[in-house]
Image 1 (cartoon, rainbow, N blue to C red):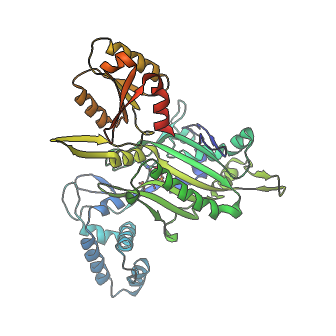
Image 2: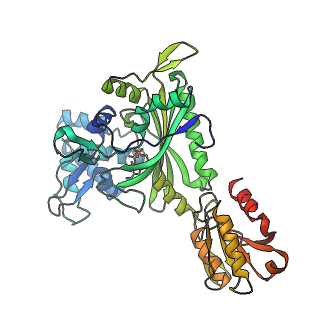
Image 3: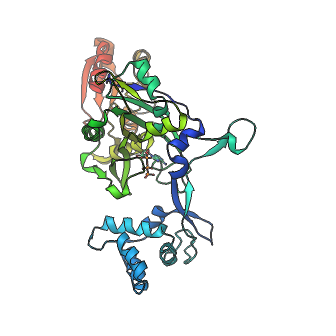
Length: 443
Ligand code: ATP
């Protein structure tokens, strides 16, 4: 956003008028199918429960179900419509299995074959029920239905309702985007895998408003831009892939959709979604608010409802992917070195300043360097322990550069800069440190 003139930033409200969430479809559709275990009272999201069942077992259970209904032509036809055996991919079978679990007719039979991952009992699951993921609360002192508000489950809707405000005040023309980073809240039943799935998380979303005739061009453009963004920040390309959503799996608002997935130690998981949302959102907000959200196109002199290409990333989930990707254990001589090989732009500390020893004025020079750098960069001063130990501590934190003040500094005002990954050291003049770091980190 900072580097592009066609994208504006915004910080929209977390609590918005409840009609916003009716218009967006969240009140009606932002649900996950859940089942409860009657014995231990645990609640599971259907797809997460399905993850606990092996592929072999899923296949077996589906075969048993088909066998059980083979004399009922109506049921058999429905089963075969859901599950076309000509499609032999594992992914297809897994997704059909999830669909059956949710189905009121077949779900019960399948669920009775599964054991509760929590208490180990069988035949204890209820049928699947839809559970809305939005946190609900009340505005003002009276807790009745007219005072209901929701904590936003995504940042996108705050952008849509402010579309014309931003477009007009920033004097943008199509195509242009609005981006924001902010908290989103979802009442996830099964939080798991550290930052991967939490109830309160940070999103970074960008909504790109385009002429409807150009939707495909911009959808493809943003897909490519976004995967390149992860790679440009050092993420291993072999651990990145697209998952294109098949047409029958698209969300209610989407014409085309793809996830960017990262291969975590626990398997592939989505880190960002790119969606062609068409004119669904702006049209719905117009309809529910009674206010026009049309854009006046100077060239054609026509009022149009732009299409939206959305890039929706989890800041916290992506950060976790960067963290996992950066983690390295290396053997250095007879010692194990743990190092976070973050791209320098992502390192939380950009440089550490270390006096070799706390005497002869080395500490005073180092403190001065640290104070000077602190105005521009996040730096860390450390004078505790042997220098080798201090380097290792910074390696573990992913700090790309260590600046050491030593005896030579006292005579020629040079310092040592040690680079984290290669562990190479070079001497530079102390009055060039700031420029040196800036060039290495940002250029
Ligand atoms: P999932 O299928 O994993 O629940 P989603 O498809 O519902 O994710 P989106 O609504 O597309 O996710 O949200 C965009 C991004 O927000 C995701 O790609 C992910 O990085 C992040 N995200 C979504 N839910 C969570 C969560 N509970 N915790 C952390 N990050 C999340």
